[in-house]
Length: 215
Image 1 (tube, rainbow, N blue to C red):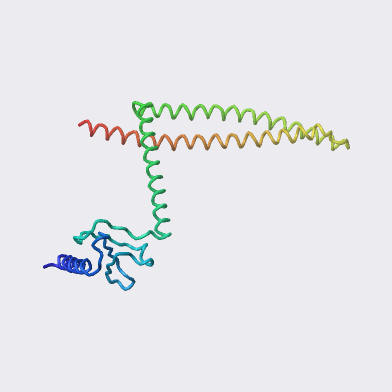
Image 2: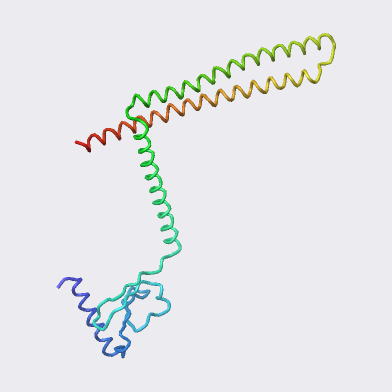
């Protein structure tokens, strides 16, 4: 007789004795739990201090008819909630990736189309940069002229008009704005290059996987 069978046999014997001497036949239920010392206990009710612990309900044939797991601790509930959120986020990312894959395959038929699209976006931004730089050069020349006028007045001992000072400040401000705008557009170009590099690699993977599946 192995250990498992022996434990089952002992449980049945103990259970039968309890049914015979416990006056519990009409109730039709017997409870089994483990006390703080690790000892298995039986009774027609569970002591309050063990109510939240793991326990079992046995019928009059000493067969377990219900198993109640121990109440979860606050830490266990918090960990379950954390894992639930992690899984939900992983599922969201998986769905988003599948959606992006579908868009990629629906939008392009080959890598050449992707490269042409990428170059077109970059060239369009480059054209805007050239126009902005051209305007900046004109602003710089205007600023130089305004500053020269102000310097001439100062050398002549004349006060510089407020309007001239405002025009100088506005020209400087516009030059700074244009410079920032160009830098932002250059960053945008880099993002486009990086995105298309990733998309082309993924497109290649999807096409390879599709070809392998077809074979």
